[in-house]
Length: 78
Image (cartoon, rainbow, N blue to C red):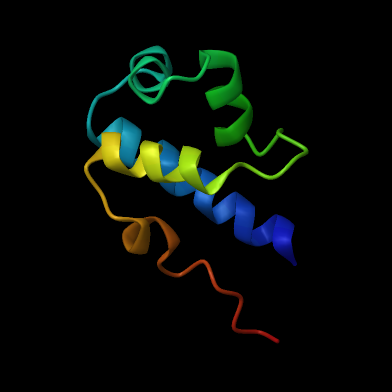
C-alpha cells in the first residue's frame, strides 16, 4: 500500500524536475543532498522513509507546493 503511494511521489518528483529542465545533480545540490540519494528517491530504491523536510525542500526547489506533490497519491481503493 505505502509502496504504491511512494512510487507516485517519486514519479512526480521526476516529472517536475524534468519539466524544470533540471538535472539530478542540480536539484540535489540545491536541496543539499547527494545526487545518489536523489536518484534512489526518484527510483523508489530508498528503503527508509524520506524525511518530510527533504520532501519540502525538493518541492520548494521545484517551485511546487507539498499539496501538488501529494495530490492524487492517496490510495482510494481501500
